[in-house]
Length: 168
Image 1 (cartoon, rainbow, N blue to C red):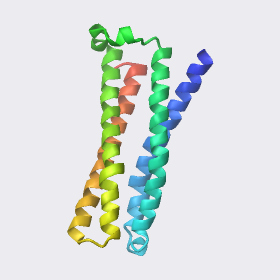
Image 2 (cartoon, rainbow, N blue to C red):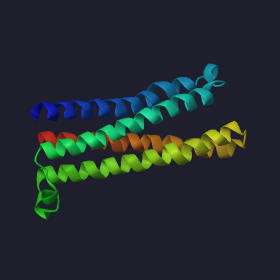
Image 3 (tube, one colour):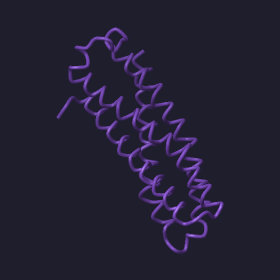
Image 4 (cartoon, one colour):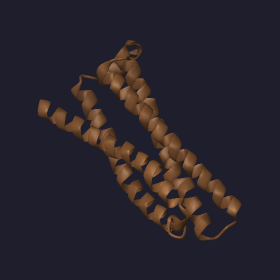
């Protein structure tokens, strides 16, 4: 059983590394390069293709994190009865878990808005050659949602550290 727990933790960490690393790579490497004049002609098509690929893999990683997160909690002795006990949530582990759950929920919500509503509308407006203002508005929304998703994901990581290592 202990080996299964370590496998689950390893998968959880690998999925989190992929998710956060991918968000950082897109924000710090891909998007700045695509803003260069030489890459502007291919920028929309390239960003759409990379975005769709990362969207698929990112949601798989999110599913892996949710599943392994539940397995990890069970392996650590967190039961439904414990989760229903208000005293649990006032302790250091419970507070850290609550923070992580809020951050994860926020990251999922923001990412869903980005991937399934704002991103496709930005791409559609760009492909249909709609007015520059509309395209810019949708692109700005997509950019801000991506940044907020990254921030919420980093917050989840910090709360995960508090769960394992305790509060500073």
